Image (cartoon, rainbow, N blue to C red; front, top):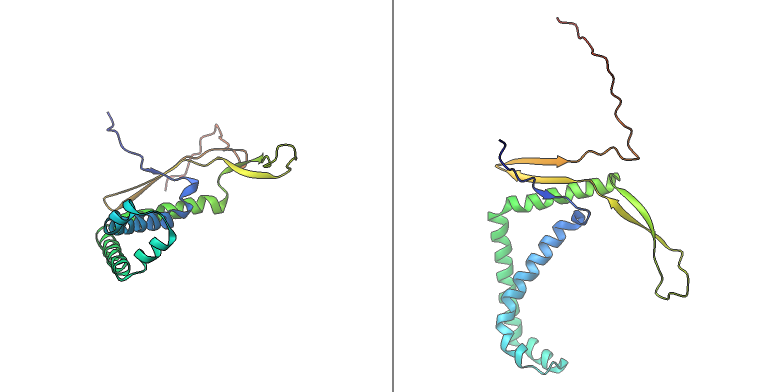
Length: 172
């Protein structure tokens, strides 16, 4: 009996900007986690006026805490790059695979009409929406890449032609 093997991460159309999302949300998350504890008491007791915020954050204390938070974020980014480089390469590979599918047009689209904001004014705008994105799975294990791809014979592909004859190759 075969053991259960995980297919890997599914490549989706939204993975075309995966590196930006990974870096942006990771760094902003670390920045907020390191910046908010310095100012938590102010944020809980403020009256939410612009003058209060300017006086608090544009001060020596606010700028020093910003520099400390930026230094902690840069240190975390360096440590992640140093010790989790394989994870970064996996994100880059997944983005490249998603872009490859999108740039070569290996997906199917359908036309949809958008309704306008006002229901009484007809809208003739049509928009393409992805109706079928091929199933592609990416896995990185023990230094090897595994990519599983679903091969479909859709309307834009030519079907295989099978012959019932057996070819005999000459033996040398």
